[in-house]
Length: 283
Ligand code: NAP
Image (tube, rainbow, N blue to C red; front, side):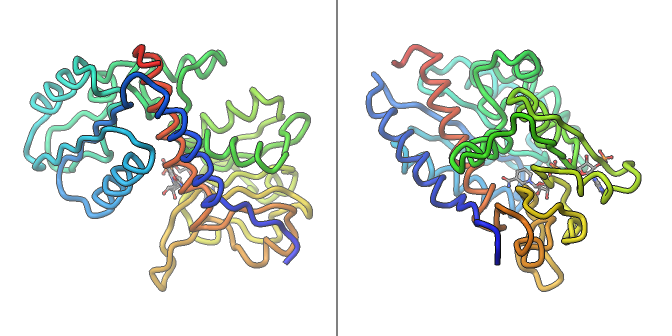
């Protein structure tokens, strides 16, 4: 195997230790509130891991497990209350909200005070990212940028190809690479001849959600390959978009799934909550 494996797990542990050290110096603890509506098992797992991360970093955390039938009005009222509570610095509403009810996810995100929007999904924070003057970055793309930095991979002057254009991953990822002076191409489901574009990438970020979408013939030898996706293959095993073993033969750096971008995403949420605590005068 030629590529260096980017160790997201180790880097996340280092990041969380730094956050814990910084948090211990504040006047009071950073606090994170996590809202879970309904009983989606995957969301439940995420909420539990966020609680553990908070414990690790010395944060206060509170969980709100609401029944699926709670309704939009009561959910917005809870967000309003959390917006007002000084011990809460970050508010996170686990998405997707349950189907078959009258939920409006966008309205919920708009309700979260921008200074407590540690996911950076509020249009105010999205706009700030566009102009490069931000408090928070969305956790997944921010985690990717940290990984590049840690391994001394500078996007400046490189052709960066991002596959996927979602609001939470693809678009902000492209913007962050652009801020770092990469030349960025964004691909999506209607991009013809995807391979001809991915083959030009010096840094290739895959954020689609399709097992083995990126095969070795789609990767330039020596490219840096970042796999954001979290899929289950036919055997039920967690995997990304990249056909890992053959691509690792030709790439210079590659992130594994699991153990790559996922742990970094969680660590960046802790960093954003620390930033929010500072914004709220806890320094
Ligand atoms: P999403 O909202 O479903 O977006 C997927 C994107 O992929 C869309 O822009 C879509 O294009 C594009 N796409 C679909 N099929 C394609 C194809 N054949 N060729 C090229 N592009 C294609 O997903 P997401 O929320 O961005 O998440 C992407 C993946 O990352 C998922 O596997 C998710 O589980 C994972 N994820 C991981 C983390 C983490 O912490 N590691 C965090 C968030 C997400 P259109 O816009 O044209 O439909």
